[in-house]
Length: 326
Image (cartoon, one colour):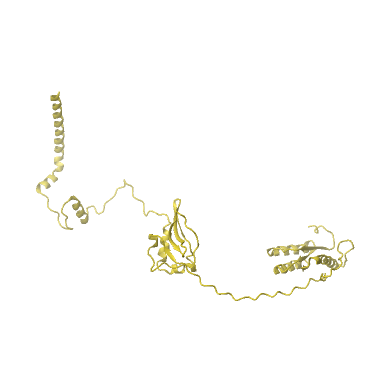
């Protein structure tokens, strides 16, 4: 920004740092260096103090960035050589337009150091350090499979596998709460494997192992595995009614209209009569009973009148007894 309004013939930025920029910033920095070079006619160089822990990718990305900016990347592991590099960069930038640094502008080179490398060239790269001999990977011991045991009686565990439950390659270690109903445990330590618990108005279940991976391969090979998982899931689903019960006042039609032979036998047994074999004719009733049952509609008014007369007579007799008592 300071060089944007400058009228100088040479605009050159020298960045001196003992750190590294993040590799994901490479694209943005290269774009910025190219924009500076094209819009403000300013070039950029980087003098970086490096060591054995410097990321090799940083060196490559810094070279690409300075190439886009028209400068150069100068790494050094000697901090005392930084002033020499700065003076050399200023001199190189001025020489590109046929100028030399003026005395007093701070661009003159200080006396060379005894151990400093030539200012115009970066120090030679260090030979690569010998890599330690890589040992062949050791074969991993086979994983010990976890035995599964049932610790409670529940319909959710039926049918029981024979002779024992399948094993697991691994399970998530944990503890069941006091209110949980643990059905299966895994391993010698008895880690809860299958447990259910009420939560509010609902119910939750947990299986502490991966049934879809290699750990649950034996469980999946069991013939009853689909039905077993289905009833574990069904146990936590909300119960839904199969149909709406009919209202009490709704008219109900009985089919068939007459009792079945089996119902006739049951009714006869309740009434204390001899059971009638299915298809057999019922025992004939007496003649008087048949005539009386046929004349019930005709005799009903007279029977009611007789009942009223009996009640009136009882009332009069009661009043007479009370008068004699007085």
